[in-house]
Length: 244
Image (cartoon, rainbow, N blue to C red; front, side):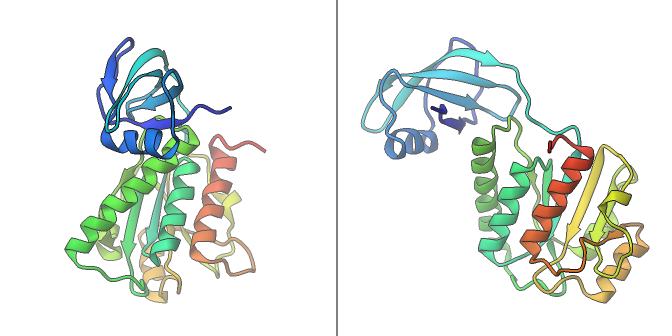
């Protein structure tokens, strides 16, 4: 049986006894109903993970002892970023969740001409918190030991001013004659995926003029969240650690 795994944003040390944070307590005790003596795995995003035992259990608190440490890493050698135009909430959550499972190092939401979601600053802060929670949950599930960075949303025009010379940028362009096999081996890639209606012609031209490589996934038109998952999986297979 798989041992349940939780993100614990605390300094962790071998042999330490600690009280579980409230969020971990709710999930481990109130949802999964873990009992005294049962094991759980804790990680804090700084690398590696700890095997812990539940040693005290109360109505509102629980304590564990850290018995062993595994200095493992399940991070991809490919530093992969997903730059995703804002989608409807459930589609955005899906795209982010699968991106984290597939090993992205950071996630950049993008405001584009055809983005159907428009939010004020207060709602953006709430969305950021929500996306961070989605990413943490995906890390717990997939066994990752580092937490990908979730950036605040920004406009495409502003994003184009931040491009790095050390990153290779790829954008889905339906009319392109190139596919993902034409992307040269590199350690740092950023993938731009448009909204439900796709990038506008002007946006696509601006990205290509900025030096991005346009690629196609083939004749069929995929939904945005399907396209992002497909591209990330293919790139991890070609240049990362996904195996056939």
